[in-house]
Image (cartoon, rainbow, N blue to C red; front, side, top):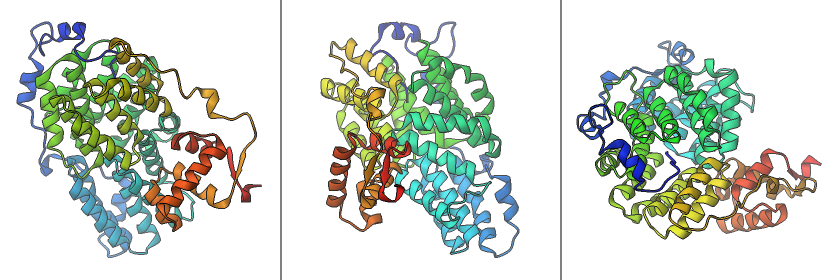
Length: 460
C-alpha cells in the first residue's frame, strides 16, 4: 500500500513519467505490462518447505507424517496464490492430524500462517490459540518463528503498526534464520513497510539492500517501491513493480501480488496513469477472491480505476468484518482520494491511521487534505493519552475475558461464541470497558491489555 504526500494528478509526478515513459528512452511501463503473465503453472513453482517438516514425512501412516506429506500441496498452492486450493489442503492437514498432539500443532501452525497471509485474521488467531493450547502454551522451538510471524501479520493488518514493528524488529534481529528464506525475506520487507508507516523512512531505506537480497522478488519490489515513492520517484516505483508482474522473474511468490498490484494501482492513480491503474485493477480482480486481502484490495483498485466509491465502500465493510483495521483505514483513504465525501472520509482515515500507530500514513492523508483545501484534524490520539496517570484498572473476570479476546483480534461475533454470550452482551461489555478504562477504541483497549494496565480480580 502506497502513501505519497500528494493527491491525484500531481503535476510534477506526471511530468516525471511522461505517460509511462521514463527518461532515457526506456520501454513504457504500460507496454511492459501488456506482455506480463501474472499466473504461473504449478511446475514453475518450487516448494517452500521447511526442512524440519520434510524430515517428518517418512512414508509412514503416523498422523504427523501424513501432515508433513500434505505440506507440499499447501506450500505450492500458497506460492501460486491459489487460495482455495491452499485452504482445502490445510483442511486435509487438519483432518489428518486428528487428535495427535504433535500433528495437530503443525497442522494448526501451517493454517495460522497461511490464513494470516490471506487476511483471514480471526481464523488465523483462532488456529494459533488452538496450537498453543495443544502445546499447553509451551512454545515448541521449531514452531515459535511461525507463531511470531503470524502474530506480526495479524497485528499489521489488524491495525497495530507499533506492535507489529516491535515484534518484527525483535524477530528480524534474533530468529530470522529459523524461517524458510521466503518468509525471512517477507519479514524484512514488511519491517521496511512498517518503518515507513510509523514515520521512519530513513531507517526503512537502510533496509533496502538487504530486502532486495533476501527476496522474494515480489515482496522486495513492493517494499522498495514504497521507498522510491517517499523519495519522489513514482516512475521508478512503477517500473520496479512492473518488473515483477511477469512470472518470468527469478522468484515466484504470488501471495505478494495483491500488495504489488494494489501499490501499482495507488501510484498509477496518483500519477494519472489510467492504463497502469486499470491493469492493476484487472490483475487484482483475476486473483482468487477467497482471500479477504485479495477481495478488499481488488475493490479498492476497482474504485481507483472507475472512480467509483461503491467498491471502496464494500471493501471497507469487508475489512471491518475481518477486524482488519489497516485495510479499513486504506479504504477510507481511497474513498477520500476519489471524491467520496472527502472532508468526512479523509478525516476518518487520518484518525484511523493515528489510532493504528502509523503517523507516517496519517501525515500523508493530511497532505492530501491540505492539497484539497480541507482542514486537517488535530491529533486525536497523542502518545500521552494512551497511558492513564492512575494505576492499573481492575476488571471483573468476564470483563477481563472480553478485553483479552479483543486484544487477540477477535470480532464481537467470535467473542460471543467463545464466551457463550450474545453479541449484544459483548457490545454492552465493550461499552462498560471503554468507560471504565478511558479507552476509546479496540486498538487502545488491546494496547492496555498488552501493557498490563488492565488487571483481573485474579491478578490481585
